[in-house]
Image (tube, rainbow, N blue to C red; front, side, top):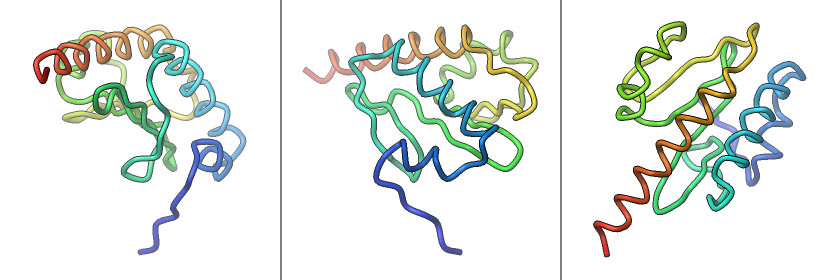
Length: 123
């Protein structure tokens, strides 16, 4: 199966229907405002934020917007994530509901702390 490749997050978002684009833009905005030091990239074919390694990824899907903060964050925020479908390192936000922007912000802050700790251990 052919997978599209994108050079920028703008190109990635533009490839989705308008309703999905709206949610992806909101996700990008809250992550960017919460982690302004992080570099935007396309990694694993989806939008990624990097700061001493991967902080978070997000992406559009047929029935949801995926948010990929990793398994430690899923475990850390398990109570708050109960309304959403989750797996080991992924959260699925349905397309027909508002994004929980406050929760996304908290998770991104947590991931920044984790990557900062990892970077200090490496030096």
